[in-house]
Image (cartoon, rainbow, N blue to C red; front, side, top):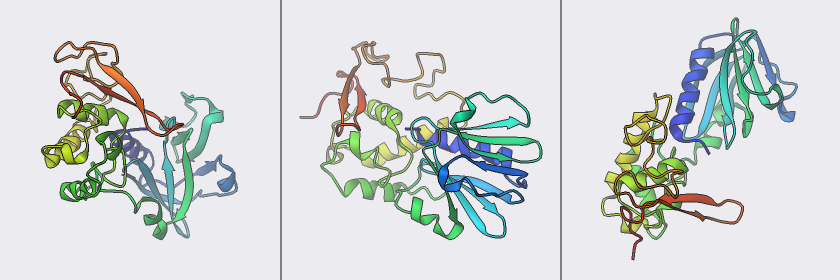
Length: 264
C-alpha cells in the first residue's frame, strides 16, 4: 500500500498535468465507466486525502474522479505521442489535454462521483498527515480510543490518522525506540510520536526517493524497513521481521531487538 507522501506527489503530478486545462478526451477502461465521456470538461485540480485522490472536473455537472493506488497503482504524465512506461493493458484511466496525457495504471479504485458525495468516500478518514487541516490533537484522541491496540495496527488504521503505510510504521517505531507490538497505552509520549509521523512525511513529500535516515544512498535510506537479516545502522544488531495480521492480510513488521525491545 502506498504511503501518504507518495499519494501527495501523485496529486501534485496530476495538478501539473491537468489543472486549469480542458480535457480533449477521456478514456475510462473500467466497465462501470466505459461509456463516460468527460471531454470538454475543465479540470479544477487534484487533492490527496490520506491515500485517496480526488480530481475535480467540471462539465455541465460538478464531478469528482476518485482514485486509489492500492498496491500496484500509479499515475504517469506524458507528452502526447510519448511512449508509456507501463503496458497499455494496465491503464485504467487516460485523460488528455491539448498536449499532455495523464494515465492511471493498475488503479485499485476508479469511480466518478457527484461533487457533493466526496465525503462519502473520504469522510471516515482521520486527520491527514499532509493535509491543510492536519490536527495532531485529534489524531492522538482517536488513537487513544483503543489504548490496548498495538502500534502495528493502530498506526495503519486510516480512521485514526491518514497517510501511514507499512514503511513509515516500521521507521516511526524505530526512531521512537518502540517495538511494533507496543500498545498505544504503553507509548510514553503519544503526541511526540504523532509529531514525528507528520515530520517524516512532510520531509519526504517532495523527494524523489524517500529516506528516514537522512542518507539518500541506496541501502542507507531506511533504518529497518526491508532490512531484515541486515545489521542495524545504529547498533549493529540483526534486524528482525515477522508477519502479523489476519490470514490473507498479513503485513511484515521490522524492528531492531536491541533498539526496540519487546514490551513486557
